[in-house]
Length: 388
Image (cartoon, rainbow, N blue to C red; front, side, top):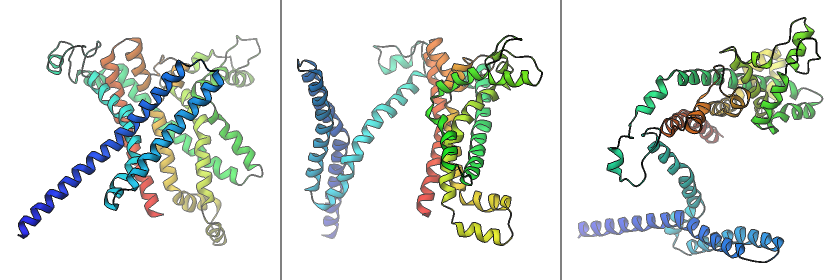
């Protein structure tokens, strides 16, 4: 009898798990599908309406925001009325499930699609063929594109340059941000200084590149120089240099481009470091000074260990920025003079050379390079949360 009861209980438990799984899938996919359908009906209605534009705009806002809010309220109310075991299983998916479904639709599926394209030549997979026909077609090249990614000279140059961006760009951003945070906290004009240093963060990468183009601006010898670097050169008795010469000598020209990102990201690092430094108890710093520690000892032996988690998080975040860097290089040099990085090579192969397979392979390699850094960053965040 016990065996029969155990078997019956296992079947009921299995049935409950299956029903729970189906309910989670419905909540994850059903809510956004219904929401999109309701919004689509509203769009069709408003598109064919002859009402004034102001009325149409107001109706669209109320229909979109209000309709989705009502939809979530209805599903939440339905789940709240279920028995407690089912409520605890399904309630999180009322809110988290749709976000996961949308994330999968706009991120996971395109990633798989990009990987599939990377297995074919420049023309990509043929339309109208089944899976077997595509795998046996002449356009299917397997992992050859990935072999080319790691063997072509331009790609090796791009990997080298990205390594320079990671080593110098992220490191200098963190170092300067930390130094500025420490100094600004002791300044009488702390708020003004921090605002000015953080100001470049409000500028886009393209805008920053244009600004630095003006800094490298060149006028013939004998004319007033408006570029900052050439002004300094001529004031020291040198001859002005045409701005491309600042960025034509490889690999040193990459450093002139890295300066732009350091200028942009140092303010970001400064703000986070300043907040972390203010979290160090003042009693510890005063006690160390009473014990005879100088400011350098306090900085290296107390401040840095206390904010080590923040330093790691900021550094890994900027590493992700530098791995994906594109705008600065493309605006300043277009990838010429040995300044190509992985992202510019992807753009060049996918959109200039129309080699979709090779471009997709570069995109996948870039994604794989970013994932470990993101994972490490999230791991550090969880550890700090658990410690707190």
